[in-house]
Image (tube, rainbow, N blue to C red; front, side):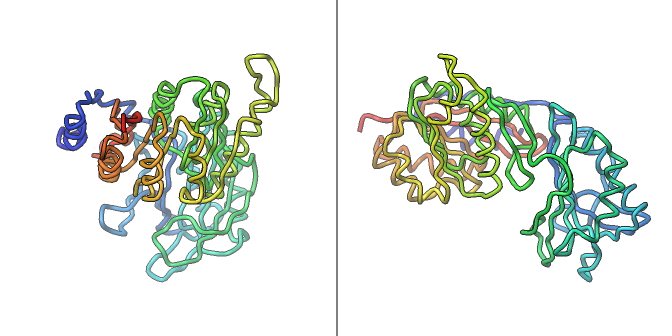
Length: 366
């Protein structure tokens, strides 16, 4: 990663007398466990890939080296299934055809793939033959098969119509000592080795026995592993798919034992506040540790103001947008409300200039 990408982060650390940690990097090949690929071409010559930069010209990528090998295998099986079933790929210029895109996610423990078929219709009927062939081609490599309907002319890949065609309701991962469930419409990181390192770093900054509140919690990949040693954990999330995964993870706590060997008590530590972060600010009232993993736009302004008004002992900020993180950090650090203690940049997307930032803020003297 070019040094100039990290320069603004280094400057923030210098301003706050904080030593930035070295950039964390992970595997650069075969790391991508999730992919969204568009489908174009003709029945006999289908293309499955991504668009050239700043264009709608699709590039077929049969052997992408950054994909987990199973993703390439699924894409190959899809090309075969399109030809055998006679399924028409999407024609963007006329908004015709059937199959417009796929989403693939790999479950590491089973080495099988959750596959979503995105079509232009409002029912799954047109891809029944395609689904049958895919099951035959992939066999035990297919974790689950889903249909998603997106009939609109849009660059947004997924539509609002869903149906499970076969398999379990969610992928299962083990992360931070907890079972993490990913329904197909929930957000998940594609670089799982580095995502695990981020989770472990956050956990290292959370002392035992604390009341924790996590905003933008997703399926609970960070917070679920904290429940066993925390006094309480409150989750806030707005996405329906992520909330389904989060509740599956909470339900799995019934199978875990506390330090005293009692089952079922861990769930009693958990509260879920559904909705936008601005409607969950009361979750700050008793929180000693706050974790926030917002989307690229950064923290919602009312949340920043609430944190500044009543700073917790620690705020752990996981950022996927460097520009928004720098903006939010300077707001949080104003008037010594917080001190910036540690910063860890992570190269979550190899071959790009994107940097994920994991930062620890501690309550200041004011």
